[in-house]
Length: 522
Image (cartoon, rainbow, N blue to C red; front, side, top):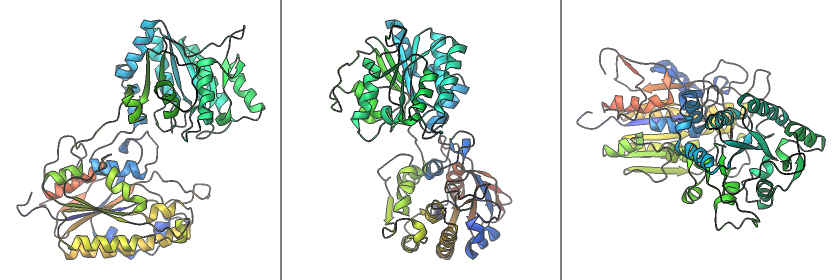
């Protein structure tokens, strides 16, 4: 690193600025954006992947602001929980997960039944059927008795798709020679997250006391629910019984439970009902003495404190960009309006709430006088820019991370003319910010966390309000830096690139690689 310190650097994140052909749905190319046009034409640029495995998501999954900022700030791929599980299955290491191995072993030793419960779905939001199949394979290998309690989806999947998933599950049972269904319930009851305990009580009492409609064929039970006007999400608890009407899958003393949802928010309440000795949500007429209760991921600090282990506990990330800058004794600034403030702070710091030493933060309020941002597509970008320029010109910051939220937030409205206005507002801000950077002898990296405004119509010409899976631009504005181009890469390569520009060593945990392709000198 130069003796007089690193060259001050602005990391400018234009949220929702993706790359796509010039079509009617591309607000970015349809807007009048002279500053962005000059930026892309004058300075070294490349494309970064911000979806799928490049950012720790399953193949084909679109990125989002949380994932994007974590990858940028970490300087590496931050593997999301769903992919962590997928990879463990692919690499045949799922059985090595301590919480899972323990619950299987304890249940087998007790001679009890292992109860797998979770959302029967391939929606990939809370769970995935392939994870359940892998768990059943482990149970078959361990020769442990297993019951599956199926929470029906119909929210992240079509409302009457559950019968098909139940048929798939029956096929898995037959293939493995293990497993049977115990309770069938819509997620409305088993996966509440709003402390509507009357709903959760129905699922709990079905599991522990067999309260609910008795059924003998799980696929037919779901189809009969449809005929009764209940779609997947709202199926009232059904209890599998034998020919004599006896429940076939009650959670009882000596049993083990494994909740296989990987998303926490809708799995907490039912888990608390089984584990909290001070539980007050409803009267528990039965409280089985389990050999263990474990979950796929950590659902809450409260449950962890109650001794509920997770097969995939949360990971902590050391030597992220904010920590490195702080450790160098340098000052840094994070600035954004409300909508993206958490992203340049908490998520950029990979789940750390408190600032690092020398990290300042500026929060600019997002507009509150409109219901949706198409009514005010400029949002608060002008104020963010003014405050950012003032902070930059103070000369005290080596790294400034600034997010302009417009292209994403207005893109989500689906109103293309408003998104075009948002692009033009952002363009003016980019012009102002880069002028301040260049005039002061600094440098900037201009990029995005994911796409949105560049693809606002789908292939059928219908409005598309979601993020895209497109690449995003990455431009290096560094006057006087000759003989350098940028290679294609991913979001996790941005932080290593900044360190390379500074002549600073990249720490071992930062597995991203510099985007700089050096010619003669740097």
